[in-house]
Image 1 (tube, helix red, strand yellow):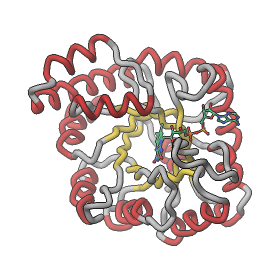
Image 2: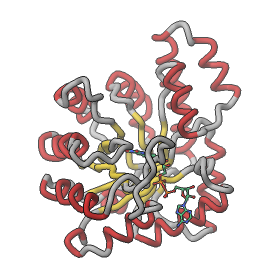
Image 3: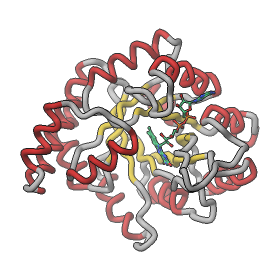
Image 4: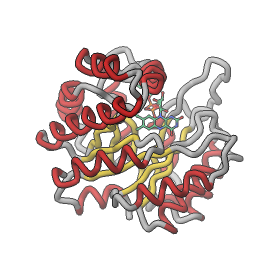
Length: 290
Ligand code: FAD
């Protein structure tokens, strides 16, 4: 089923998870037990990230998404980036998704690496979406896009970013998933500005329960999310007590989600970091609130 249909048919906030393929050093099977545990929690769909380098020989995103959909019976969304791929390569990846029954994608530009100049066929995610929508053989595919409550790190301003986001939606993105954020007021402000800009597709809030200090430092360097004082105090207090930090991270995320649900969020997308323990505990707290 298309993700847009899931939103249309749901009278409550749509719960989804995100996972990533295992690192090169471990086999793809290592993620299957994680998926089985996540599938037990009955999310509406699970999305699978795509390697930033755009290496089309690596089919792990496709294979994992196919396992989620075809073996676990949970709808799957495969991420795809375009900045390091040609149009032909993108079609090869999309053909692979279609042949494996994957009918939903998250269409992304991908990060531009200083060590690898981007290819020239696509400059923005909106161009990728337009390209896919021009191909009749992908008529039925569901396309989602990424968005940034605090603005994308390369955008001139939040307003400029939202105007660019409108192009992505006009091109055919049917719903949006936000980058992680730790302060809900950024989300509410963004949602209001997006509505004023005429963006009226569902927006899922991307929530990452923190599990370690190094994880959060890495994420923040990559995406530029702000860390509120309340959050920094929590990480500082528990940084040398890993188990306590995990529980505190779950409590913080549950608090954020409770507030988002009370404020009518369309969906909650949990960045599970392939950690079923964390996902299970978090879902246990919020499932009756959805
Ligand atoms: P775009 O929408 O193209 O935006 C990128 C920048 O260009 C923004 O500053 C925007 O304002 C600007 N822009 C957009 N359109 C135009 C235009 N027409 N004219 C001028 N400027 C424009 N990365 C991965 O490598 N793999 C993944 O699986 C992955 N999954 C992600 C999932 C989510 C939910 C999110 C939020 C991000 C994910 N990313 C992933 C990271 C993403 O690839 C980066 O954030 C990337 O830098 C931007 O991708 P985008 O699709 O948002 O790009």
